[in-house]
Length: 312
Image (cartoon, rainbow, N blue to C red; front, side, top):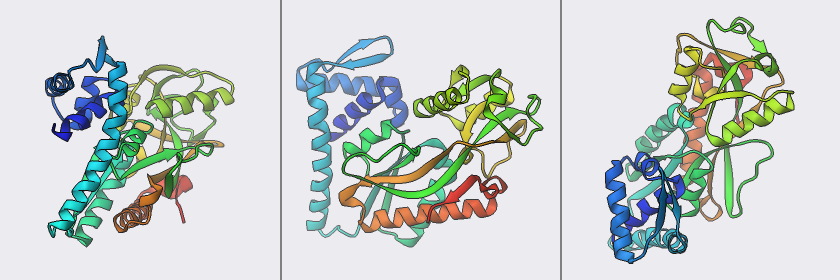
């Protein structure tokens, strides 16, 4: 059996639907659906129950998930050993899962530097937000993930967090919003506004922070796409609390980012398995991302206003 089927199977499991897995893998939805039917034929069991657009694992599917994660991790090790035996140990493969704002602001610059420094390197980048990306790391499908976390969060067992930067959140409003000329606001000043929520983790942080400040945000819609968020805000659909990385380095006509008094901050880091943290390619990746972060701060007024701090 082609291990690609197992990779697609795990993508479906981790994203929760055929369509979401197709987007992650850059496949068509019918292709993913056909591959899952082929896997069920090979295994001669039903792996999923389907209701609407979402899928649920059967008992057989849950059993296969554990074996698939172990198998893919072992297969990657086997490939490395076979290449070394065949004299192809000069190639270095590095796979990284990254969330949208880091992918736009940091990852391309870092990868360009890595490839320029070492022509043996081959890099694969997957789009995945925490906590979904944690499954990719645990399953051995990626070597590292771009992670964001809040002060109370801790790395999982057997994982190491390599810090890159600490960033502040801003309140995004349209240019005709009543708060647009304020510069810095209390979050509760926007309590009566409608809101655009983010990914599940960011949405929960928004709700928690707002409740601490005495109100519950009226979230009309949610998206983890930075571009869609900016469009929704400029069209007046709602305001949004987003990290500075989602706006730095670009002009956004019609959108006004406001500082938040007693602001919310988060850490951005590379998360890797503990036993891989000292690998040369991981050390190089961490260094390239920190350099990209420093360059971003140097050229971005928003970053220079103490809203992004590159970790020592």
